[in-house]
Image 1: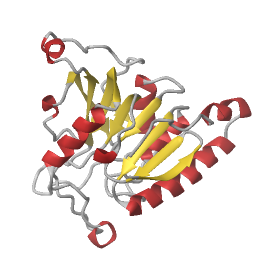
Image 2: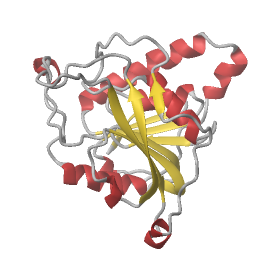
Image 3: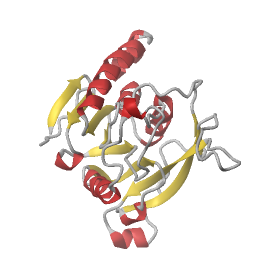
Image 4: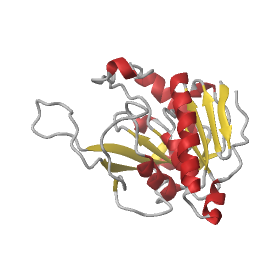
Length: 250
Protein backbone atom coordinates (compact mmCIF):
# COMPACT_ATOMS: atom_id res chain seq x y z
CA UNK A 1 0.00 0.00 0.00
CA UNK A 2 1.52 3.31 -1.06
CA UNK A 3 0.31 6.86 -1.42
CA UNK A 4 -0.27 7.51 -5.12
CA UNK A 5 -1.88 10.95 -4.98
CA UNK A 6 -2.26 13.43 -2.13
CA UNK A 7 -3.37 16.99 -2.72
CA UNK A 8 -5.81 19.35 -1.03
CA UNK A 9 -8.71 17.18 0.20
CA UNK A 10 -7.99 14.03 -1.84
CA UNK A 11 -5.84 11.04 -0.87
CA UNK A 12 -5.48 8.01 -3.15
CA UNK A 13 -3.63 4.82 -2.25
CA UNK A 14 -2.34 2.26 -4.74
CA UNK A 15 -2.87 -1.21 -3.33
CA UNK A 16 -5.35 -3.70 -1.94
CA UNK A 17 -7.84 -2.08 0.43
CA UNK A 18 -7.31 -5.06 2.76
CA UNK A 19 -3.95 -3.48 3.54
CA UNK A 20 -5.43 -0.10 4.43
CA UNK A 21 -5.74 0.43 8.18
CA UNK A 22 -6.67 4.08 8.42
CA UNK A 23 -10.09 4.88 9.72
CA UNK A 24 -12.73 7.11 11.27
CA UNK A 25 -14.42 7.81 7.96
CA UNK A 26 -17.89 9.32 7.77
CA UNK A 27 -19.32 7.73 4.63
CA UNK A 28 -18.55 4.87 2.24
CA UNK A 29 -19.57 5.18 -1.41
CA UNK A 30 -18.25 2.41 -3.63
CA UNK A 31 -18.78 0.30 -6.73
CA UNK A 32 -17.08 -3.05 -6.02
CA UNK A 33 -16.61 -5.95 -8.45
CA UNK A 34 -19.51 -8.33 -7.93
CA UNK A 35 -18.97 -11.45 -9.98
CA UNK A 36 -20.27 -10.38 -13.36
CA UNK A 37 -16.98 -11.26 -15.10
CA UNK A 38 -17.33 -8.05 -17.08
CA UNK A 39 -16.81 -8.29 -20.81
CA UNK A 40 -16.95 -5.40 -23.24
CA UNK A 41 -16.90 -4.92 -26.96
CA UNK A 42 -13.80 -2.89 -26.12
CA UNK A 43 -12.15 -5.84 -24.33
CA UNK A 44 -8.84 -5.07 -26.00
CA UNK A 45 -9.00 -1.64 -24.36
CA UNK A 46 -10.24 -2.52 -20.86
CA UNK A 47 -9.43 -6.15 -20.21
CA UNK A 48 -10.96 -7.97 -17.20
CA UNK A 49 -11.80 -6.20 -13.95
CA UNK A 50 -9.51 -7.46 -11.23
CA UNK A 51 -11.40 -9.41 -8.56
CA UNK A 52 -14.58 -9.69 -10.61
CA UNK A 53 -14.48 -13.49 -10.33
CA UNK A 54 -14.10 -13.48 -6.53
CA UNK A 55 -17.28 -12.57 -4.64
CA UNK A 56 -15.84 -13.93 -1.38
CA UNK A 57 -12.84 -11.64 -1.80
CA UNK A 58 -15.06 -8.64 -2.47
CA UNK A 59 -17.14 -9.38 0.63
CA UNK A 60 -13.99 -9.68 2.76
CA UNK A 61 -12.83 -6.31 1.51
CA UNK A 62 -16.19 -4.67 2.22
CA UNK A 63 -16.11 -6.15 5.73
CA UNK A 64 -12.64 -4.71 6.24
CA UNK A 65 -13.67 -1.33 4.83
CA UNK A 66 -16.59 -1.08 7.25
CA UNK A 67 -14.16 -1.28 10.16
CA UNK A 68 -12.79 2.05 8.94
CA UNK A 69 -16.25 3.66 9.14
CA UNK A 70 -17.76 5.43 12.13
CA UNK A 71 -20.55 3.46 13.78
CA UNK A 72 -24.02 4.43 12.61
CA UNK A 73 -22.83 6.10 9.43
CA UNK A 74 -24.08 5.44 5.91
CA UNK A 75 -22.95 3.17 3.09
CA UNK A 76 -23.83 3.24 -0.62
CA UNK A 77 -22.87 0.17 -2.66
CA UNK A 78 -23.56 -0.03 -6.40
CA UNK A 79 -24.55 -3.23 -8.16
CA UNK A 80 -27.18 -4.99 -6.10
CA UNK A 81 -25.60 -8.41 -6.72
CA UNK A 82 -23.76 -9.07 -3.44
CA UNK A 83 -25.06 -10.78 -0.25
CA UNK A 84 -24.88 -7.55 1.74
CA UNK A 85 -27.09 -8.93 4.53
CA UNK A 86 -24.02 -10.90 5.63
CA UNK A 87 -22.33 -7.61 6.58
CA UNK A 88 -22.92 -5.59 9.80
CA UNK A 89 -25.41 -3.35 8.01
CA UNK A 90 -29.04 -2.51 8.64
CA UNK A 91 -31.75 -0.12 7.52
CA UNK A 92 -31.38 -1.26 3.92
CA UNK A 93 -33.04 0.81 1.20
CA UNK A 94 -32.89 0.14 -2.52
CA UNK A 95 -32.10 3.18 -4.62
CA UNK A 96 -32.60 3.12 -8.37
CA UNK A 97 -30.15 4.93 -10.60
CA UNK A 98 -32.16 5.85 -13.71
CA UNK A 99 -29.57 5.98 -16.46
CA UNK A 100 -31.90 7.85 -18.81
CA UNK A 101 -30.98 5.61 -21.71
CA UNK A 102 -31.51 1.98 -22.68
CA UNK A 103 -28.41 -0.20 -22.51
CA UNK A 104 -27.56 -3.22 -24.64
CA UNK A 105 -28.00 -5.90 -21.97
CA UNK A 106 -29.35 -9.32 -23.03
CA UNK A 107 -30.60 -8.77 -26.58
CA UNK A 108 -32.78 -11.90 -26.35
CA UNK A 109 -35.05 -10.11 -23.85
CA UNK A 110 -37.79 -7.71 -24.98
CA UNK A 111 -36.87 -5.01 -22.42
CA UNK A 112 -33.48 -3.33 -22.33
CA UNK A 113 -31.85 -2.30 -19.03
CA UNK A 114 -32.15 1.39 -18.18
CA UNK A 115 -31.30 1.37 -14.48
CA UNK A 116 -28.86 0.11 -11.86
CA UNK A 117 -29.50 -0.63 -8.20
CA UNK A 118 -27.67 1.07 -5.34
CA UNK A 119 -27.89 -0.35 -1.82
CA UNK A 120 -28.16 2.21 0.99
CA UNK A 121 -27.53 0.99 4.55
CA UNK A 122 -26.31 1.96 8.01
CA UNK A 123 -23.25 0.49 9.71
CA UNK A 124 -24.19 -1.13 13.03
CA UNK A 125 -21.65 -3.43 14.69
CA UNK A 126 -24.13 -4.92 17.19
CA UNK A 127 -26.09 -7.89 15.83
CA UNK A 128 -28.57 -7.51 18.68
CA UNK A 129 -29.24 -3.94 17.63
CA UNK A 130 -29.58 -4.98 14.00
CA UNK A 131 -32.06 -7.68 14.99
CA UNK A 132 -34.06 -5.08 16.92
CA UNK A 133 -34.44 -3.00 13.79
CA UNK A 134 -31.96 -0.28 14.70
CA UNK A 135 -30.23 1.74 12.03
CA UNK A 136 -33.24 3.25 10.31
CA UNK A 137 -31.78 6.74 10.48
CA UNK A 138 -32.66 8.62 7.32
CA UNK A 139 -30.15 10.32 5.11
CA UNK A 140 -29.29 13.90 6.04
CA UNK A 141 -31.34 15.10 3.08
CA UNK A 142 -34.43 12.97 2.54
CA UNK A 143 -34.97 12.40 -1.17
CA UNK A 144 -36.81 10.02 -3.44
CA UNK A 145 -35.46 6.54 -4.11
CA UNK A 146 -34.71 7.27 -7.78
CA UNK A 147 -31.60 9.26 -8.69
CA UNK A 148 -30.85 10.59 -12.14
CA UNK A 149 -27.90 12.14 -13.82
CA UNK A 150 -28.33 15.90 -13.84
CA UNK A 151 -26.36 16.28 -17.05
CA UNK A 152 -26.83 14.64 -20.46
CA UNK A 153 -25.06 11.32 -20.69
CA UNK A 154 -23.80 10.24 -24.09
CA UNK A 155 -23.24 6.71 -22.83
CA UNK A 156 -19.59 6.80 -23.84
CA UNK A 157 -17.26 5.32 -21.24
CA UNK A 158 -14.12 7.39 -21.02
CA UNK A 159 -12.11 6.26 -18.01
CA UNK A 160 -13.31 2.88 -16.69
CA UNK A 161 -15.61 0.12 -18.01
CA UNK A 162 -18.07 0.51 -15.10
CA UNK A 163 -17.64 4.26 -14.54
CA UNK A 164 -20.38 6.07 -12.58
CA UNK A 165 -21.45 9.69 -13.24
CA UNK A 166 -19.87 12.18 -10.85
CA UNK A 167 -23.14 14.08 -10.46
CA UNK A 168 -25.01 10.94 -9.31
CA UNK A 169 -22.28 10.32 -6.73
CA UNK A 170 -22.51 13.95 -5.61
CA UNK A 171 -26.21 13.49 -4.83
CA UNK A 172 -25.46 10.49 -2.58
CA UNK A 173 -22.59 12.26 -0.82
CA UNK A 174 -24.63 15.40 -0.25
CA UNK A 175 -27.44 13.36 1.31
CA UNK A 176 -25.30 11.48 3.84
CA UNK A 177 -22.48 13.76 4.93
CA UNK A 178 -21.62 17.38 5.64
CA UNK A 179 -18.79 19.59 4.46
CA UNK A 180 -15.45 18.73 6.01
CA UNK A 181 -16.30 15.06 6.63
CA UNK A 182 -14.43 12.23 4.92
CA UNK A 183 -15.76 9.93 2.21
CA UNK A 184 -14.03 6.57 1.67
CA UNK A 185 -14.05 4.41 -1.47
CA UNK A 186 -12.17 1.10 -1.09
CA UNK A 187 -12.63 0.33 -4.83
CA UNK A 188 -11.77 3.75 -6.25
CA UNK A 189 -11.41 2.77 -9.92
CA UNK A 190 -10.90 5.88 -12.03
CA UNK A 191 -11.66 8.22 -9.12
CA UNK A 192 -15.26 9.31 -9.69
CA UNK A 193 -16.19 9.08 -5.98
CA UNK A 194 -13.10 11.04 -4.97
CA UNK A 195 -13.89 13.79 -7.46
CA UNK A 196 -17.53 13.94 -6.36
CA UNK A 197 -16.54 14.20 -2.69
CA UNK A 198 -14.05 16.98 -3.40
CA UNK A 199 -16.61 18.94 -5.39
CA UNK A 200 -19.02 18.64 -2.45
CA UNK A 201 -16.43 20.07 -0.05
CA UNK A 202 -15.64 16.74 1.63
CA UNK A 203 -12.33 15.02 2.20
CA UNK A 204 -11.87 11.96 0.01
CA UNK A 205 -9.84 8.78 0.55
CA UNK A 206 -9.66 5.90 -1.90
CA UNK A 207 -7.80 2.66 -2.55
CA UNK A 208 -7.28 1.20 -6.01
CA UNK A 209 -5.46 -2.06 -6.67
CA UNK A 210 -4.67 -1.42 -10.35
CA UNK A 211 -2.03 1.19 -11.02
CA UNK A 212 -3.40 2.01 -14.47
CA UNK A 213 -6.59 3.31 -12.85
CA UNK A 214 -4.65 5.17 -10.16
CA UNK A 215 -2.93 7.07 -12.94
CA UNK A 216 -6.24 7.84 -14.65
CA UNK A 217 -7.80 8.90 -11.32
CA UNK A 218 -4.93 11.24 -10.47
CA UNK A 219 -5.14 12.95 -13.85
CA UNK A 220 -8.93 13.26 -13.59
CA UNK A 221 -8.76 14.76 -10.10
CA UNK A 222 -6.25 17.34 -11.24
CA UNK A 223 -8.25 18.26 -14.33
CA UNK A 224 -11.86 18.10 -13.11
CA UNK A 225 -11.35 19.66 -9.69
CA UNK A 226 -9.23 22.48 -11.08
CA UNK A 227 -11.79 23.19 -13.80
CA UNK A 228 -14.58 23.24 -11.21
CA UNK A 229 -12.67 25.59 -8.91
CA UNK A 230 -11.96 27.97 -11.75
CA UNK A 231 -15.68 28.16 -12.50
CA UNK A 232 -16.71 29.02 -8.92
CA UNK A 233 -16.76 32.33 -7.04
CA UNK A 234 -13.76 32.54 -4.66
CA UNK A 235 -15.81 32.04 -1.49
CA UNK A 236 -17.29 28.78 -2.88
CA UNK A 237 -14.10 27.39 -4.36
CA UNK A 238 -12.24 27.91 -1.09
CA UNK A 239 -14.57 25.46 0.67
CA UNK A 240 -13.07 22.60 -1.32
CA UNK A 241 -9.53 23.34 -0.14
CA UNK A 242 -9.69 20.99 2.82
CA UNK A 243 -6.91 19.18 4.55
CA UNK A 244 -6.16 15.68 3.26
CA UNK A 245 -7.11 12.72 5.45
CA UNK A 246 -4.63 12.42 8.36
CA UNK A 247 -5.40 8.75 9.09
CA UNK A 248 -2.49 6.33 9.36
CA UNK A 249 -2.06 3.72 6.65
CA UNK A 250 -0.12 0.65 5.78
